[in-house]
Image (tube, rainbow, N blue to C red; front, side, top):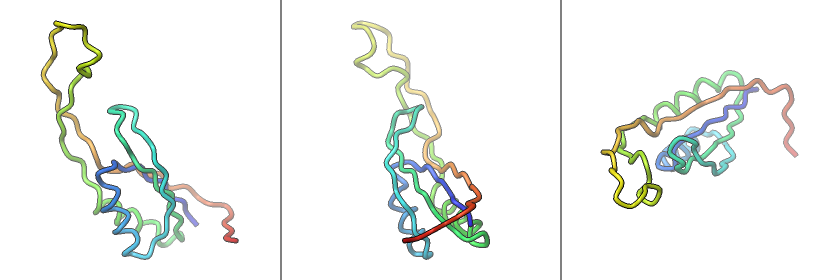
Length: 109
């Protein structure tokens, strides 16, 4: 048995959860916040048999793609009045981060 821990951007959560359900995978959804842009994320805990773990990863890969987004380096309220505001910077957002962990024991009550 494997536990797949997946962190996805809020914008991708509906697409990935629908794809997982369509493929028969159950999961637990936990709200989380990213550190770099401090934007909303969702962490999914997905249990899968050893043989199905790769299928879970494939579903996640097909559902979540990175994309470019422009962000301001400093939020407007953090800069002193009259300070120079640099141009927005292009960063990659979205996609997914997956951790696959061996599960020693699993019980359902």
